[in-house]
Figure 1 (cartoon, one colour):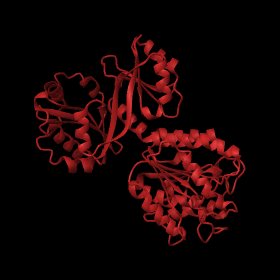
Figure 2: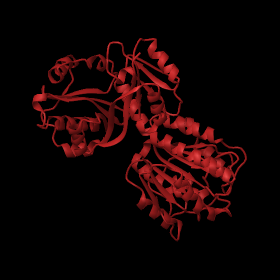
Figure 3: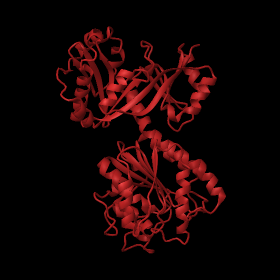
Length: 479
């Protein structure tokens, strides 16, 4: 669930309708369902004072949705994301205007037309943040009304569009509602622009490929009931897509970390089939983010292979309609699971010294270790297909865990303790070793899956700093 930060700032706008942005911010905030928290930041006597108040109100983690107010409210949320994510952050700026003027080039002197340039280090002295955003971390989308100095700055710095976003980037997405065609409830409407559907599809495409760490929606000056009706549909969908991006990226990493023999992406699904295995994860379909999944195509895929139809409904919080549809078609719910995440440094600090845990580099020893701890080695059929980044951590023959590291994250799989050695700190030591290895690999974040009804394991993970990112379960129909 996101945190909504409402900033009814209008003083940064030069539009005659600017005072209406106060009401617009409140209405936008009310359009966002299920927020974890709703924080309203009262404006100060100056833009700098308001910025300081916003900085103090921003939460330390989780998706933050900032609603304005004028575009200047984005100053501190973007700066906070940059401090947290550094070079990995890219900002995608959906806006009819570039907001790239400096105090020396701005025709109006209004800050909302300078905020993006200020983020790069050139702006009013009391508003320039540190560190500064590099121009190559910026992508403009829907921009169609540039002042000459802005156009010149874009040419000189090479600022591009969404296609220039770095492959491994995390994103902050800014939406000035004047990016939309036909909207009149904004201070400076411009001809042309994106339709609500085009904007939604663009954000969905970004969310499918990147974790979105912040979203800003600004410049709503209510004037037309038709705009209000449109935004009541659009705003929740944008938030839903951005909120789902992190769980979806975790699930994509997990799908690669636990690879099925046959993987196919089509008809709104990631389809997986492993004839020699019976694990649900490698013999189930995962719905793609932003793409309407075709249930007939799903059922045909598994019917052709004479297999039960299994769907990993994940993240469950974002696929309620699909879950209901499958239930109505006779699919049985099973294996409710929590996906938990943690900071590797915090886990290592809480778990202590990973005494007695060995990284087993000799893969020929792995089957015997799985057999000793679990009583079977059936996971080896999948583990043998992991291409890179995998390490087996073993506490003698009393416990083990498999780690797979990719893109700044380490997934923990196959966590197990021999029944005769439980409650003796074995799992804690393995987790400490996993956290240490993750940090050595340059991956500061951990994720793992645990069944909802496994109360002892959940207690262990929570005690070491893991929190729930999202949930999933399976829906299965046997022919």
